[in-house]
Amino acid sequence: MKMFQQLWSDENGFVVSAELVLIATVLVLGMIVGLTTLRDQVIAELADVAAAFSNSNQSYSFSGITGHSSSTAGSIFDDNTDFCDVDADPVGSDNHCISIVVAETEAP
Image 1: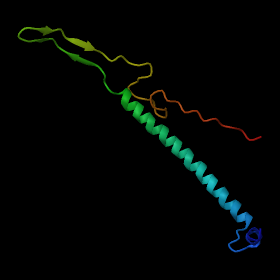
Image 2: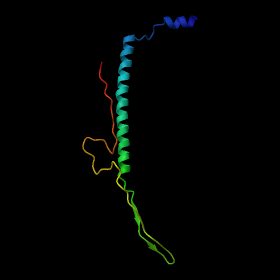
Image 3: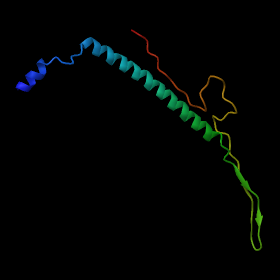
Image 4: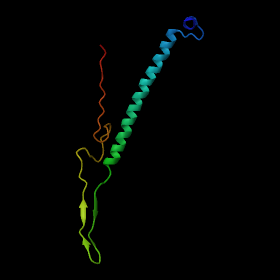
């Protein structure tokens, strides 16, 4: 019990509450801004990966092959355009059907 009383009355390294609140506020605001930026950049990178996948040509074909005692017929597969594939995205729009919705709240 005596140790707790000693710790309670010890004022070495005392930080004023206002300074602590100010430091905590700055840290929290910085963390919010940093995490928001991180979120936006992760979404942008994932959109770039999705654009790379959607721009890949998945069609293939091979012609018939004839050997000494057998032959195969040719085959073809054509990659059809998806519902959101376009040649170029308009300026200012998000890539390939990815829409980012940010809810704006009004102050009371």
